Image 1: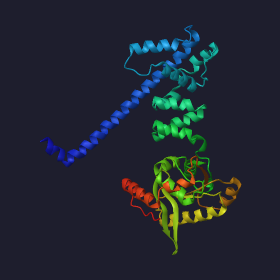
Image 2: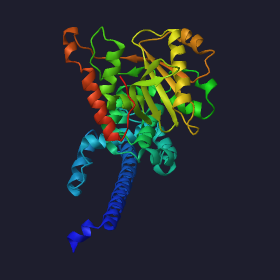
Image 3: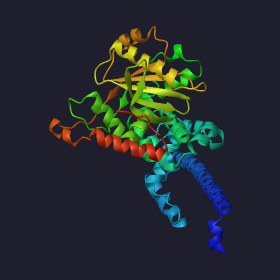
Image 4: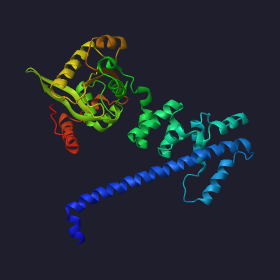
Length: 376
Protein backbone atom coordinates (compact mmCIF):
# COMPACT_ATOMS: atom_id res chain seq x y z
CA UNK A 1 0.00 0.00 0.00
CA UNK A 2 2.75 2.44 0.98
CA UNK A 3 4.67 1.86 -2.25
CA UNK A 4 1.54 2.49 -4.33
CA UNK A 5 0.89 5.65 -2.36
CA UNK A 6 4.35 7.06 -3.06
CA UNK A 7 3.68 6.60 -6.76
CA UNK A 8 0.40 8.48 -6.60
CA UNK A 9 0.84 11.89 -8.28
CA UNK A 10 -1.69 13.68 -6.10
CA UNK A 11 -0.03 12.35 -2.95
CA UNK A 12 3.42 13.36 -4.17
CA UNK A 13 2.27 16.91 -4.95
CA UNK A 14 0.62 17.21 -1.55
CA UNK A 15 3.77 15.84 0.12
CA UNK A 16 5.96 18.46 -1.57
CA UNK A 17 3.64 21.21 -0.33
CA UNK A 18 3.60 19.72 3.16
CA UNK A 19 7.42 19.50 3.30
CA UNK A 20 7.65 23.16 2.31
CA UNK A 21 5.25 24.08 5.11
CA UNK A 22 7.41 22.16 7.57
CA UNK A 23 10.54 23.98 6.34
CA UNK A 24 8.77 27.34 6.62
CA UNK A 25 7.69 26.49 10.15
CA UNK A 26 11.27 25.50 11.02
CA UNK A 27 12.59 28.79 9.66
CA UNK A 28 9.99 30.79 11.58
CA UNK A 29 10.79 28.87 14.75
CA UNK A 30 14.51 29.44 14.28
CA UNK A 31 13.95 33.16 13.70
CA UNK A 32 11.75 33.34 16.81
CA UNK A 33 14.36 31.54 18.90
CA UNK A 34 17.07 33.86 17.56
CA UNK A 35 15.03 36.95 18.39
CA UNK A 36 14.32 35.79 21.92
CA UNK A 37 17.98 34.90 22.48
CA UNK A 38 19.20 38.27 21.22
CA UNK A 39 16.61 40.12 23.29
CA UNK A 40 18.04 38.30 26.29
CA UNK A 41 21.57 39.25 25.16
CA UNK A 42 20.45 42.89 25.00
CA UNK A 43 19.13 42.80 28.55
CA UNK A 44 22.22 40.92 29.71
CA UNK A 45 24.50 43.48 28.06
CA UNK A 46 22.67 46.32 29.83
CA UNK A 47 22.94 44.56 33.21
CA UNK A 48 26.64 43.82 32.72
CA UNK A 49 27.35 47.49 31.98
CA UNK A 50 25.40 48.66 35.03
CA UNK A 51 26.99 46.09 37.35
CA UNK A 52 30.51 46.93 36.17
CA UNK A 53 29.89 50.55 37.12
CA UNK A 54 28.16 50.05 40.47
CA UNK A 55 29.91 46.97 41.82
CA UNK A 56 33.45 46.49 43.05
CA UNK A 57 33.81 43.05 41.49
CA UNK A 58 36.98 43.82 39.58
CA UNK A 59 38.44 42.59 36.31
CA UNK A 60 37.54 38.95 36.97
CA UNK A 61 33.80 39.66 36.91
CA UNK A 62 33.10 38.40 33.38
CA UNK A 63 35.29 35.32 33.81
CA UNK A 64 33.44 34.34 37.00
CA UNK A 65 30.06 35.09 35.42
CA UNK A 66 31.01 32.88 32.51
CA UNK A 67 31.95 29.99 34.81
CA UNK A 68 28.76 30.27 36.88
CA UNK A 69 26.36 30.53 33.92
CA UNK A 70 28.09 27.73 32.03
CA UNK A 71 27.90 25.46 35.07
CA UNK A 72 24.18 26.14 35.47
CA UNK A 73 23.34 25.96 31.75
CA UNK A 74 25.91 23.60 30.18
CA UNK A 75 23.76 23.08 27.09
CA UNK A 76 23.98 26.79 26.16
CA UNK A 77 27.06 27.82 24.17
CA UNK A 78 26.80 31.59 24.57
CA UNK A 79 28.28 32.10 28.04
CA UNK A 80 31.99 32.03 27.29
CA UNK A 81 33.93 35.02 28.56
CA UNK A 82 34.61 36.08 24.97
CA UNK A 83 30.94 35.99 24.05
CA UNK A 84 29.98 37.94 27.17
CA UNK A 85 32.47 40.59 26.03
CA UNK A 86 30.79 40.62 22.62
CA UNK A 87 27.37 41.02 24.27
CA UNK A 88 28.63 43.98 26.26
CA UNK A 89 30.26 45.55 23.18
CA UNK A 90 27.13 44.96 21.10
CA UNK A 91 24.90 46.60 23.68
CA UNK A 92 27.20 49.59 24.12
CA UNK A 93 27.52 50.09 20.35
CA UNK A 94 23.80 50.27 19.69
CA UNK A 95 23.21 52.29 22.84
CA UNK A 96 25.49 54.95 21.31
CA UNK A 97 27.98 54.54 24.16
CA UNK A 98 31.55 53.91 23.09
CA UNK A 99 32.90 50.51 24.14
CA UNK A 100 35.85 51.16 26.41
CA UNK A 101 37.84 49.47 29.10
CA UNK A 102 37.70 52.54 31.35
CA UNK A 103 34.93 52.98 33.89
CA UNK A 104 31.73 54.69 32.79
CA UNK A 105 30.61 57.60 34.92
CA UNK A 106 27.54 57.33 37.14
CA UNK A 107 25.94 60.10 35.11
CA UNK A 108 26.33 57.96 31.99
CA UNK A 109 24.76 55.00 33.83
CA UNK A 110 21.89 57.22 34.89
CA UNK A 111 21.30 58.25 31.30
CA UNK A 112 21.73 54.65 30.23
CA UNK A 113 18.98 53.34 32.50
CA UNK A 114 16.62 56.15 31.53
CA UNK A 115 17.25 56.34 27.80
CA UNK A 116 18.53 52.95 26.72
CA UNK A 117 16.41 50.35 28.43
CA UNK A 118 15.49 47.52 26.04
CA UNK A 119 11.81 48.44 26.17
CA UNK A 120 12.66 51.97 25.03
CA UNK A 121 15.02 50.82 22.27
CA UNK A 122 12.45 48.79 20.38
CA UNK A 123 13.40 50.16 16.97
CA UNK A 124 17.06 49.18 17.30
CA UNK A 125 16.52 45.90 19.07
CA UNK A 126 13.76 44.76 16.73
CA UNK A 127 16.07 45.32 13.78
CA UNK A 128 19.30 43.86 15.13
CA UNK A 129 17.65 40.85 16.77
CA UNK A 130 16.34 39.63 13.42
CA UNK A 131 19.80 38.69 12.12
CA UNK A 132 21.93 35.86 13.57
CA UNK A 133 24.30 36.57 16.42
CA UNK A 134 27.34 35.73 14.30
CA UNK A 135 26.29 38.41 11.79
CA UNK A 136 25.95 40.92 14.62
CA UNK A 137 29.46 40.17 15.83
CA UNK A 138 30.86 40.67 12.31
CA UNK A 139 29.07 44.02 11.90
CA UNK A 140 30.11 45.60 15.19
CA UNK A 141 33.64 44.29 14.68
CA UNK A 142 34.05 45.85 11.24
CA UNK A 143 31.80 48.94 11.40
CA UNK A 144 32.65 51.87 13.61
CA UNK A 145 29.76 54.17 12.64
CA UNK A 146 26.09 53.53 13.38
CA UNK A 147 24.75 54.38 9.87
CA UNK A 148 27.19 51.96 8.28
CA UNK A 149 26.34 49.19 10.73
CA UNK A 150 22.59 49.61 10.25
CA UNK A 151 23.09 49.59 6.47
CA UNK A 152 24.59 46.11 6.68
CA UNK A 153 21.94 44.95 9.15
CA UNK A 154 19.15 46.08 6.83
CA UNK A 155 20.76 44.57 3.74
CA UNK A 156 21.40 41.28 5.53
CA UNK A 157 17.68 41.13 6.25
CA UNK A 158 16.68 42.26 2.77
CA UNK A 159 18.98 39.92 0.84
CA UNK A 160 19.33 37.05 3.32
CA UNK A 161 23.14 37.25 3.23
CA UNK A 162 25.15 34.43 4.69
CA UNK A 163 27.93 35.42 7.09
CA UNK A 164 30.54 34.85 4.37
CA UNK A 165 28.69 37.12 1.95
CA UNK A 166 28.26 39.75 4.66
CA UNK A 167 32.01 39.73 5.36
CA UNK A 168 32.72 40.03 1.63
CA UNK A 169 30.34 42.99 1.25
CA UNK A 170 31.87 44.83 4.20
CA UNK A 171 35.46 44.17 3.15
CA UNK A 172 34.69 45.27 -0.43
CA UNK A 173 33.31 48.57 0.97
CA UNK A 174 29.79 48.15 -0.43
CA UNK A 175 28.46 50.90 1.86
CA UNK A 176 30.89 53.41 0.39
CA UNK A 177 30.38 52.28 -3.24
CA UNK A 178 26.66 51.61 -3.64
CA UNK A 179 24.78 54.29 -5.54
CA UNK A 180 27.92 56.35 -6.05
CA UNK A 181 28.31 55.96 -9.83
CA UNK A 182 27.82 58.96 -12.08
CA UNK A 183 24.61 58.75 -14.10
CA UNK A 184 21.84 60.72 -15.79
CA UNK A 185 19.08 58.63 -14.21
CA UNK A 186 17.53 61.62 -12.43
CA UNK A 187 16.81 63.22 -15.82
CA UNK A 188 15.98 60.15 -17.91
CA UNK A 189 13.89 57.99 -15.56
CA UNK A 190 10.76 58.78 -13.54
CA UNK A 191 10.60 58.53 -9.77
CA UNK A 192 10.99 56.18 -7.97
CA UNK A 193 12.59 54.22 -10.83
CA UNK A 194 15.51 56.66 -11.01
CA UNK A 195 16.38 56.27 -7.33
CA UNK A 196 16.07 52.48 -7.47
CA UNK A 197 18.23 52.34 -10.59
CA UNK A 198 20.87 54.59 -9.03
CA UNK A 199 21.13 52.27 -6.04
CA UNK A 200 21.93 49.34 -8.33
CA UNK A 201 25.15 51.04 -9.47
CA UNK A 202 28.49 50.98 -7.68
CA UNK A 203 31.65 52.96 -8.14
CA UNK A 204 34.09 51.39 -8.36
CA UNK A 205 33.21 47.79 -9.14
CA UNK A 206 35.66 45.44 -7.44
CA UNK A 207 36.73 42.52 -9.64
CA UNK A 208 39.19 41.04 -7.15
CA UNK A 209 38.18 37.51 -8.13
CA UNK A 210 39.83 37.85 -11.56
CA UNK A 211 43.36 36.76 -12.45
CA UNK A 212 44.47 38.66 -15.55
CA UNK A 213 47.79 39.53 -17.13
CA UNK A 214 49.00 43.11 -17.05
CA UNK A 215 48.27 43.59 -20.76
CA UNK A 216 44.78 42.05 -20.65
CA UNK A 217 42.22 42.95 -23.33
CA UNK A 218 38.52 43.71 -23.15
CA UNK A 219 37.81 40.17 -24.28
CA UNK A 220 40.00 38.84 -21.42
CA UNK A 221 38.09 40.99 -18.92
CA UNK A 222 34.73 40.00 -20.35
CA UNK A 223 35.64 36.31 -20.44
CA UNK A 224 36.92 36.39 -16.87
CA UNK A 225 33.71 37.97 -15.59
CA UNK A 226 31.61 35.41 -17.42
CA UNK A 227 33.73 32.51 -16.20
CA UNK A 228 33.25 33.75 -12.66
CA UNK A 229 29.62 34.68 -13.25
CA UNK A 230 28.53 33.86 -9.68
CA UNK A 231 31.04 36.30 -8.16
CA UNK A 232 30.24 38.86 -10.86
CA UNK A 233 26.51 38.69 -10.11
CA UNK A 234 27.28 39.09 -6.41
CA UNK A 235 29.30 42.20 -7.19
CA UNK A 236 26.57 43.61 -9.45
CA UNK A 237 24.02 43.15 -6.69
CA UNK A 238 20.60 41.64 -6.12
CA UNK A 239 18.17 41.44 -9.02
CA UNK A 240 20.50 40.94 -11.98
CA UNK A 241 19.67 37.95 -14.19
CA UNK A 242 22.36 37.01 -16.70
CA UNK A 243 21.20 36.64 -20.32
CA UNK A 244 24.37 36.44 -22.37
CA UNK A 245 27.75 37.79 -23.51
CA UNK A 246 28.44 39.19 -26.97
CA UNK A 247 24.67 39.29 -27.34
CA UNK A 248 23.86 39.46 -31.05
CA UNK A 249 21.74 42.26 -32.52
CA UNK A 250 21.06 42.64 -36.22
CA UNK A 251 20.06 46.18 -37.04
CA UNK A 252 19.67 47.42 -40.58
CA UNK A 253 21.85 44.64 -41.94
CA UNK A 254 25.12 44.88 -39.94
CA UNK A 255 25.70 42.68 -36.90
CA UNK A 256 26.28 44.23 -33.48
CA UNK A 257 27.30 42.52 -30.23
CA UNK A 258 26.54 43.71 -26.71
CA UNK A 259 29.31 42.86 -24.26
CA UNK A 260 27.00 41.63 -21.49
CA UNK A 261 23.21 41.63 -21.29
CA UNK A 262 21.17 41.27 -18.10
CA UNK A 263 17.58 41.64 -16.99
CA UNK A 264 16.87 43.28 -13.65
CA UNK A 265 13.91 41.55 -12.06
CA UNK A 266 13.18 44.34 -9.57
CA UNK A 267 13.56 47.27 -11.97
CA UNK A 268 11.75 45.28 -14.71
CA UNK A 269 14.15 46.32 -17.43
CA UNK A 270 17.04 45.09 -19.55
CA UNK A 271 20.51 46.19 -18.50
CA UNK A 272 23.31 46.54 -21.05
CA UNK A 273 26.85 46.39 -19.62
CA UNK A 274 29.72 47.61 -21.76
CA UNK A 275 33.30 47.00 -20.59
CA UNK A 276 36.28 49.19 -21.46
CA UNK A 277 39.85 48.50 -20.35
CA UNK A 278 40.83 52.12 -21.08
CA UNK A 279 39.91 55.44 -19.52
CA UNK A 280 36.46 56.80 -20.27
CA UNK A 281 35.99 58.44 -23.66
CA UNK A 282 32.90 60.43 -24.75
CA UNK A 283 32.39 58.25 -27.83
CA UNK A 284 31.71 55.24 -25.59
CA UNK A 285 28.43 56.87 -24.55
CA UNK A 286 27.25 57.16 -28.15
CA UNK A 287 27.76 53.46 -28.78
CA UNK A 288 26.02 52.48 -25.55
CA UNK A 289 23.15 54.84 -26.32
CA UNK A 290 22.77 53.07 -29.68
CA UNK A 291 22.57 49.67 -27.96
CA UNK A 292 19.92 50.92 -25.52
CA UNK A 293 17.74 52.12 -28.38
CA UNK A 294 18.14 48.77 -30.14
CA UNK A 295 17.22 46.75 -27.05
CA UNK A 296 14.20 48.96 -26.35
CA UNK A 297 13.04 48.45 -29.92
CA UNK A 298 13.82 44.77 -30.47
CA UNK A 299 13.80 43.06 -27.06
CA UNK A 300 11.70 45.06 -24.60
CA UNK A 301 7.98 44.49 -24.25
CA UNK A 302 5.32 47.04 -23.32
CA UNK A 303 5.53 45.95 -19.68
CA UNK A 304 9.28 46.60 -19.49
CA UNK A 305 10.80 49.81 -18.18
CA UNK A 306 13.39 51.64 -20.31
CA UNK A 307 16.64 49.76 -20.78
CA UNK A 308 19.52 50.93 -18.59
CA UNK A 309 23.15 51.10 -19.68
CA UNK A 310 26.17 50.65 -17.43
CA UNK A 311 29.55 51.64 -18.83
CA UNK A 312 32.41 50.22 -16.75
CA UNK A 313 35.81 51.73 -17.55
CA UNK A 314 39.29 51.47 -16.13
CA UNK A 315 38.91 55.04 -14.85
CA UNK A 316 37.01 58.20 -15.68
CA UNK A 317 37.15 61.98 -15.50
CA UNK A 318 33.90 63.10 -13.87
CA UNK A 319 33.78 66.39 -15.76
CA UNK A 320 34.23 64.66 -19.12
CA UNK A 321 31.58 62.10 -18.16
CA UNK A 322 29.16 64.87 -17.18
CA UNK A 323 29.56 66.59 -20.56
CA UNK A 324 29.20 63.29 -22.39
CA UNK A 325 25.84 62.54 -20.73
CA UNK A 326 24.46 66.09 -20.86
CA UNK A 327 22.26 65.66 -23.96
CA UNK A 328 21.77 61.89 -23.78
CA UNK A 329 18.14 60.88 -23.22
CA UNK A 330 18.73 57.20 -22.47
CA UNK A 331 19.54 56.19 -18.85
CA UNK A 332 23.28 55.55 -18.58
CA UNK A 333 25.58 55.12 -15.60
CA UNK A 334 29.37 55.36 -15.73
CA UNK A 335 31.59 53.53 -13.24
CA UNK A 336 35.17 52.44 -12.80
CA UNK A 337 36.48 48.99 -11.93
CA UNK A 338 39.39 47.80 -9.85
CA UNK A 339 41.50 44.67 -10.16
CA UNK A 340 43.46 43.69 -7.08
CA UNK A 341 44.98 40.48 -8.40
CA UNK A 342 47.09 39.84 -11.49
CA UNK A 343 49.05 37.06 -13.11
CA UNK A 344 52.47 37.19 -14.79
CA UNK A 345 52.25 37.38 -18.57
CA UNK A 346 53.91 33.98 -18.97
CA UNK A 347 50.93 32.38 -17.21
CA UNK A 348 48.41 33.76 -19.69
CA UNK A 349 47.99 30.31 -21.25
CA UNK A 350 46.41 29.15 -18.00
CA UNK A 351 43.47 31.48 -18.55
CA UNK A 352 40.27 29.82 -19.81
CA UNK A 353 39.78 29.60 -23.55
CA UNK A 354 36.73 31.02 -25.33
CA UNK A 355 35.51 27.44 -25.82
CA UNK A 356 35.79 26.69 -22.10
CA UNK A 357 33.89 29.85 -21.27
CA UNK A 358 31.13 28.98 -23.72
CA UNK A 359 30.85 25.44 -22.28
CA UNK A 360 30.47 26.87 -18.79
CA UNK A 361 27.81 29.31 -20.03
CA UNK A 362 25.84 26.52 -21.69
CA UNK A 363 25.89 24.59 -18.42
CA UNK A 364 24.89 27.68 -16.47
CA UNK A 365 22.04 28.51 -18.85
CA UNK A 366 20.80 24.91 -18.66
CA UNK A 367 20.75 25.07 -14.85
CA UNK A 368 18.80 28.33 -14.94
CA UNK A 369 16.43 27.19 -17.69
CA UNK A 370 17.62 29.91 -20.09
CA UNK A 371 17.46 29.38 -23.82
CA UNK A 372 20.28 31.66 -24.89
CA UNK A 373 20.80 33.79 -27.96
CA UNK A 374 24.40 34.31 -26.90
CA UNK A 375 26.57 34.54 -30.00
CA UNK A 376 30.32 35.02 -29.68
